[in-house]
Image (cartoon, rainbow, N blue to C red):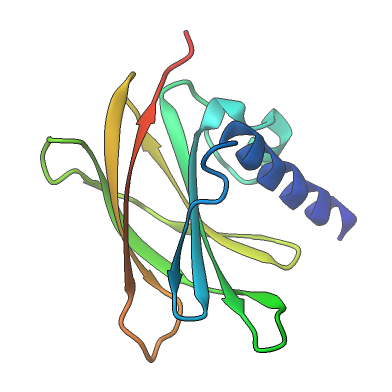
Length: 150
């Protein structure tokens, strides 16, 4: 139990450290926050990457999506969600589908997908996030540029 908590803390911490300006990227949809971040997988500690079967590579990145519900009493809770989406170089073709899988660590639930990056290429992400089976999925789109550390 403690190991899972520490692993989740390490993974979350690495994502936050790797993306200091983008750590607070989220879309507000009603009382739900859809958080997203993308980082080069080489930033992940080897033991965290191994435990969650994430390939560490200079040319691979990880997209992490999670949903938080704001409750009436001011607290929040993590909400399981499903995510579908595509990633493409800006101005390129329709892109490639992202293969999301669930990552659970303690009370955290995220959807993650690993994808290939190209140096200094802005990439467009188009996501559909279903956080409530009784509602239409929320559309989330963003652009991010990646650099390969050689």
